[in-house]
Image (cartoon, rainbow, N blue to C red; front, top):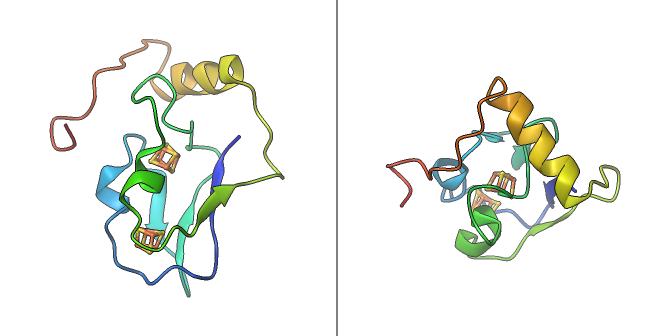
Length: 93
Ligand code: SF4
Ligand code: SF4
């Protein structure tokens, strides 16, 4: 299931560089997660990195995008052009 940033976001920009899939961008009022890119960090990390770094706990599961772990892994595979690379980005060890 993709995650979703709620209105409590304080636009601190901490989560954006932490995302291994570049799924987070600044929106009109708060930061937003692209559900087509969010894999819940499956394949990269044990925990969603954005949730771990967010200082105000404003990132929730998005019930409009339910996905199982195999589906999330398949999404990651598609995003990576069929070559699954689960190495965390060097900038985000
Ligand atoms: S859960 Fe992971 S992939 Fe999804 S937006 Fe957060 S950091 Fe990015
Ligand atoms: S870390 Fe949390 S508060 Fe900061 S921009 Fe991301 S979602 Fe918003």
